[in-house]
Length: 217
Image (cartoon, rainbow, N blue to C red):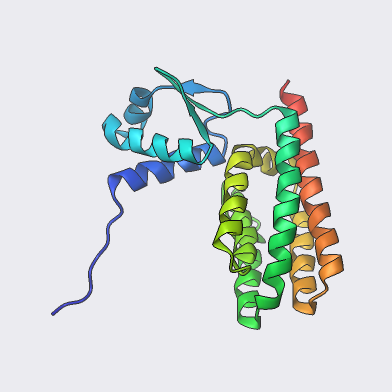
């Protein structure tokens, strides 16, 4: 019997991924309102898979649903600040738990991600997605599904604003330098310098987003 079963993503999953991507790269801005019908027309589908995608994204705190409209949840500057404060606490804890579990093979995977991010022709949106994968992969080594889920939820909250970071910086060189230092400290099991650098890394990301938000006002 042929055991090679081809799995095709459902229409619901495709619409969910497309809509989530549009939100993450800023194609749909926080606070901007649209409708299920408008979204369905833009994807060339019925409202049924869009409704399911919206339900999932609402559960991730990315969307707000009113009676006749859907909008990207808009955060105040204070909420963005609070979100990054939460990220610092949660990600520091996850890093502490993850480092003892990270082996040489794991580091190779992480360094490979950074090499891909070093590509001078990489788009801002692709770099942003790889940046997310890089950080979350480290936290996954903490081997705590509860902690990982909390971190992912916080990332989802701030993700619509991360395109402001990628659009604001003139190059990703400094961020990549910090990423490589993070891995170096992980390899050395140098927890003190690692946590200090992670805190600095997140603070600089927050400050860049804050500057971009102020320019938009």
